[in-house]
Image 1 (cartoon, one colour):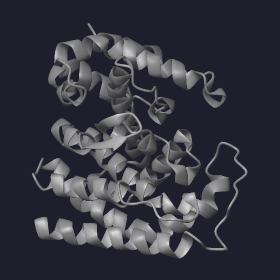
Image 2 (cartoon, helix red, strand yellow):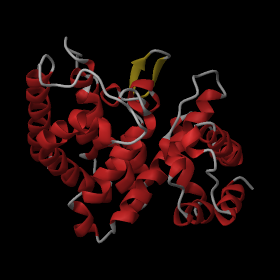
Image 3 (cartoon, one colour):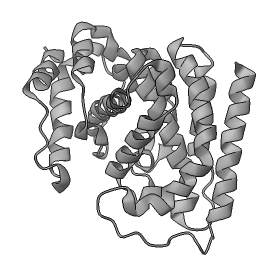
Image 4 (tube, helix red, strand yellow):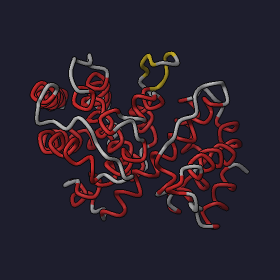
Length: 288
């Protein structure tokens, strides 16, 4: 498995590098996008990238998902490969093209976190989210970096990133093998993003920048919240992610969830967003 992970990582890195080199100064690459809040106007940007990298990314994620399911130590190798891709030097050229490695790495990471949620492999989730990199606010878990949350290849729009992740989850060929419907795949990705958002809210309380996470626009699912209520230890990796005691993290869960929900509601597109009452009751139960 170690040899296989290195082969898949090398192939993914090579495919992304070739695409960036071919497009960073391309005269056919769009230099302006008229945004409308959907992925449509961005298709000329991300479409060619996905066409070039999806096969390699899907193969990489499929192999890594096996490591997630069995909580194998080889998962670290897959995650390290994504972190290296994310942190690779940015070259000269159009930002939308030169920042593509970060978007591909994020797609890989969010897909794996979604699989960890679906499979209820919380320690695997922690393995994916824990690696730290230096950002504008110091050294943090890479999933808390603004460059992770706001991909420049999509104009720095966190919501567009969520739409792209959701669209990719719907067509992931691994869904059939896992016997998961497209809607369930998207729900697991939203659940994963909500959990990262709640954890990052703990960093905000320590003075870090407030970040916008897309997960609240589609989640959390009732199944996730019921799991968190029943299984107190499920949140242990997330407490560790922000160096908190588990009991303290659970007690603050509802407050932090609601803080992110308020932020989402400030975005005009989701002004009427409100999770069902039964979901909110479960959120509150987590903190009791």
